Length: 230
Length: 112
Image 1 (spheres, rainbow over the protein chains, first blue to last red):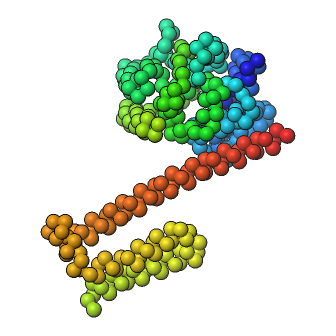
Image 2 (image 1 turned 180 degrees about the horizontal axis):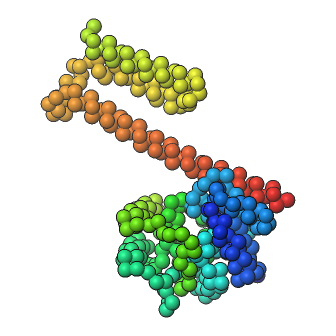
């Protein structure tokens, strides 16, 4: 049976982390879970230790890229066949992991991306957001020749080969869209499968229209740089 | 000696003194200190011989020769900034690797 590791990057997730872990255990009882605590300043570390949840504690905040890469190095060192990323904020639905695994099995893909924007029950989003999503999809298509509807989705599964690639080299700033370019440059097979995701659990989104434009600019330039790097 | 030269010499001496002080206090690594010492010693040479500057300016078609000094200084600082960005990027990669390695090692120890 294939060994599956669920990597949970967590930064200040004291409110959601226990639910996330419980849901993963219910949905994937045979999978191993590894939380990467990215130097949280709330009680995330305490909660993980008290509940005996396997975790790696980064002594410095590395951001999502550095935290996820730590998980991939762990997966490589411990011979996992597949690794899935499930964010610690509760946005990703662990019961949807099965869809990623099934898509991998069916398509023999190197990377399976869980897309919010595919399928009938796709994520409801505003007009401005849809424009942004389409721009991303367009840029991704130009750079890779493949249409990816949800390039920024973190809910994804990779095989052993990609785990090894990520362990050696994983972008730090906007890893999700960047690795699409990185893997396509290496001839890897990427597929998308529709998944359901939750809206934000708590708090208000801090993203303003101006910030969104700036974010898009930074992500697109990172993807272009990844393309140049090869 | 013109006041201009005395002023320049003063700046060079202050720069040299600062570099040596930073070296002694171990705030500056030898690798970078050499570069700064080189700059400090080269600085007066560029300014002292106005004749050379006038000749080069004339050759490049620059009407006002002191502009050449500013262009040279600007390009030098631009190169230096780029070099420092490369060093910072390299250091960041090293810090990330070290942090990950330490955290993974700690997890291994705690598991035993």
